[in-house]
Image 1 (cartoon, rainbow, N blue to C red):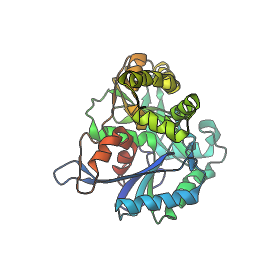
Image 2: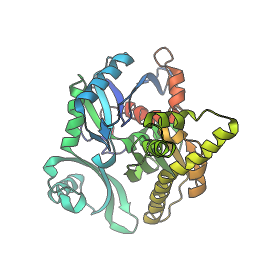
Image 3: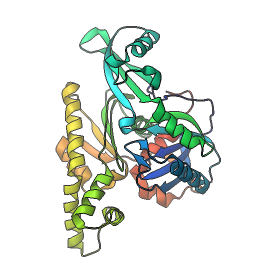
Length: 361
């Protein structure tokens, strides 16, 4: 597991995962299963009005607090300790080369000369951590290190909104690493397997390329499902909400008309697929063209008609939709299994957060 997954953590063991997206809130509670493995004990979701969260930044903290309270009340969950996460421009993830040294020496070096490694002048305003990936393959005197950092005021804005809802933020994670957690729990992989985990959310797409259980490349960009909805809304001359419904449910009409709509939908999906392709090609060129075994898609955008086959054709890599509950049982007494089935890959971040435990990294 990655050592920098917690930007800070507390001591509570009673945690639930809270995925705060730009269009919805998702709550997941994952417990150890007495029969082995894990069980999804609770899951709830509510929609968020547009504009509360934009590009990972909170614009209306009081309304977010109210919606979080609503979610927890509806879920029946009584736990107060939560794991939540950051993504987009609110968090910086960067691979850096360092001379061989001890971890504490490296931490001091990063703190004292921040501008050389991270786009921050004052590290007193930043929370950061790092993971030593290992010896640089081209220079035995250097180590490859992955840095993650976020400004304290952004972290504080999330924690304060959740504290106002009566919650305790025990772990602050990163969306990309929550994907990694859910992948590690649900999929078998060999030591040298390289897999690209891609989460297409409402406003942000997260990419995390992992080898074995270590992230070796990450990138977020601010295109997602809302980009497609806005494009449909403009082209069809309908409201955003109407376009969102048609995007998800498809239009009414004959089978031929519906198939034509699905084909035309890919025109609006094109910018996201093109940006994913550029990101993967950049990874390949930067990391020596390492072979990518497969691509796993998550988020609501993973279910868009045609996106799996389009990316597979573009990238020449086996591409499929992730199953975040492939090895996780469901407590049907507490969980609406039809909702879970309907959301499918959109559960990935919330389940990944719910799998976190205090003390793991």
